[in-house]
Image 1 (cartoon, rainbow, N blue to C red):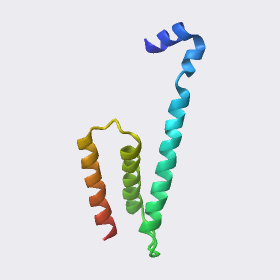
Image 2 (cartoon, helix red, strand yellow):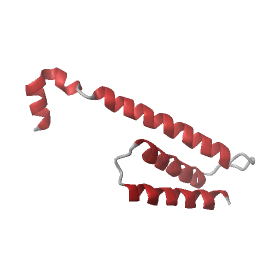
Image 3 (cartoon, rainbow, N blue to C red):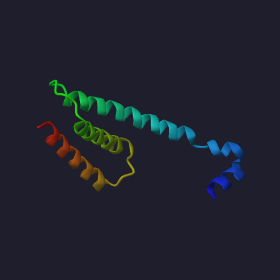
Image 4 (cartoon, rainbow, N blue to C red):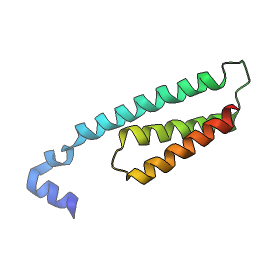
Length: 96
C-alpha cells in the first residue's frame, strides 16, 4: 500500500526518495565497523598468535555492537548499558 501511494503521489521519482540518507547511514556504519574490527584484530593478534575463526567471530560481534552503540542511538539507555557490560566481559575473557 505504501509503495502504491508513493508512486501515485510522487510518480516514479518517489521510489528514490530517501535513498541518500539510507546510503549515507550504510557508509558510516561500514566505515566504523571496518576500522573497529581491524583495530580489535590487530590488538588481539599483536603477539603473533595464529588467527582462528572463533576469536574472529567474537571480534566481529564486538565491532558490530560498537557500531550499534555508537551510531544507532534510538536504543533505550538500559539496552546500551547492558550491551556495554557484555562487550566489556567479552573483551576481558578474550584478552586474558
